[in-house]
Amino acid sequence: MELEEFIKQLDALAEQAEAAFQSCQGAESFEAARVEFVGARSGQFKLIQKQLGQLDRDAKPAAGKKLNESKARIQAAMEAAQLRLDETGNQQTLGPMLDATLPGIRQHLGRVHPITQTIEHLKDIMGKLGFAVVEGPEVEDIWHNFVALNIPEDHPARDSLDNFYLGSTGNTSGAPDTERLLRSQTSTVQIRVMENTKPPVRIISLGRVYRPDEADATHFPMFHQMEGLWIDTDVTMAQLKSVLRMFATAYLGEDVSIRFRPSFFPFTEPSVECDFLWNGNWIEFGGAGMVDPNVLQSVGYDPELVNGFAFGLGVERLCMRRHCVEDIRDLYRNDLRFLHQF
Image (cartoon, rainbow, N blue to C red; front, side, top):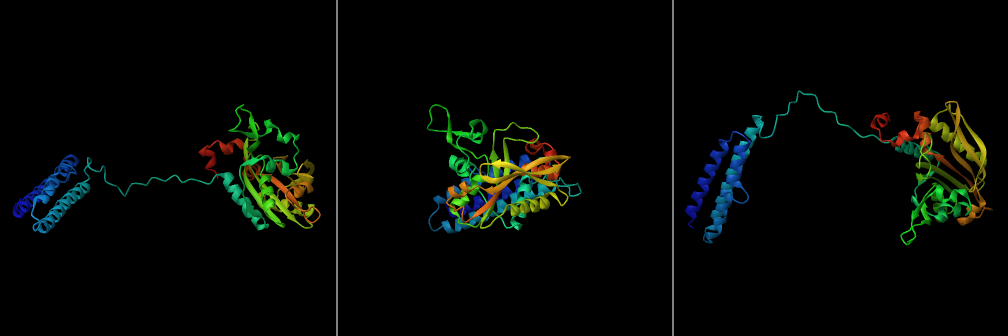
């Protein structure tokens, strides 16, 4: 093929394409012209482009230049046709034109879950009281969940009906693996921190815990705890009560009434229950006490040199008290009508 003939074909093709795109009246005619002239496989421009290889070597630079010019002409004609059809609001091309005078559609924005809001608030309060935030695993072993916390093997808290023990992959009998479980308390994080940290220690840990409780207005099989720990020299019960009172007034308000009742926990001695007054009733929101010497010894601390206190608070109950929610199940029903209030 001669260069002159190649150039004539390109000029003729460009003129035909310009005329075709100028005559387009809708989406169908525009698409037909696009496929005919610039289709990826059988378009006329593609067919002529393949003939470039038949030209002499000396003619290829001029032919390539002409090929690019013709391609630009066709592309410009196609874009002009598309713009013209868009501006005329052709219903078959791009649908109705945007009417800037119409009211907009409000976007539905997500919200932070009330439990997450509560956790962030608790971190802020305890941070101002000098407590650092730490985290730990939700799948625990017996040592960190029970043994190091001075909970003996025959204690009811270790019963298989009161914990979510995990199945063992190496156990063909189908019996639960009593060495691994979903943690039943965030006190496990305190043990892990003390094992790797020398006194003084002043931390809080927040996270999910699991107990097979029947769901009712104040109980749920999965809930959140905030555990606090302060280990140093000469830590007293008075400091524990002061910290809990300052926390309660900071989160629930100056008018909150709280009380401490004697209690028993394997990992603290002496121990107390903490209650707040709500709707005329005293509701437990946590337990606390001075860390038992056996717990200190289990992590390598000398009870003769250091002591401290620990406390554990229910995040859901604090959230419910602050926002006047009377059923814990409302927090986990995923009802947007309820969650949009927060």
